[in-house]
Length: 300
Image (cartoon, rainbow, N blue to C red; front, side):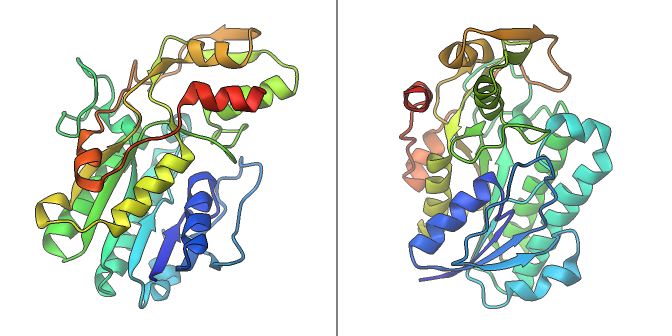
């Protein structure tokens, strides 16, 4: 078994990953600063060694990396609209924070860093599906800072002897997803509004997204840790999606027929859909959960 460190460990995605690592018998160092104040709650697994700490403070986190085998870096300032309002915060967390994680990893001979990135890096493209070799087209500060984090991972992989794997998530949903505030997922928000008897609020509606279940995202992280990789497979981006997309209006229709439509918000891409052939070939990863099936179970 391994000693693993997870940043963003008490949030939606991070907490599921910690649960899986603890379940598999790994020793887990969990770091979170609970800065996502709009989250309904945070999820600390008591089987992990939990630390309320901020990745932007190197002195605060550096000693937690001692004797760690694998690092999963999920902590981020993760919302598009708030990044327009406070781009400096996005840079501090997503760039400086990532640099701190990589620096601490290099100084402690970490075997591999798995970095959580975003499909927002693709922006608007002329063709789908999105391939890792496509040019990036950041439409907002959040995407730009996450792309900077990716580039730092590549630099550390190539120059500081720290293997890195970059996973670009496509619209993650599932159990524990936040349903309110700036960190709400669209599906989480829809279910919360339906439960409260309110019409679902849609911004635009024609945008198409590749929705990926949290269990599939966790599996991708686990495979990124276990996989035996050649040098040409590290320091690279891997799309984590399903290869199928739905419009926001289609998703709304799966949940409720009561909705209100507002103008689309700035910084939102028109469509995303992942080419997952690289993750399939190199990591042996395949998505298992279908969005419409999952929603059907929630409404049953």
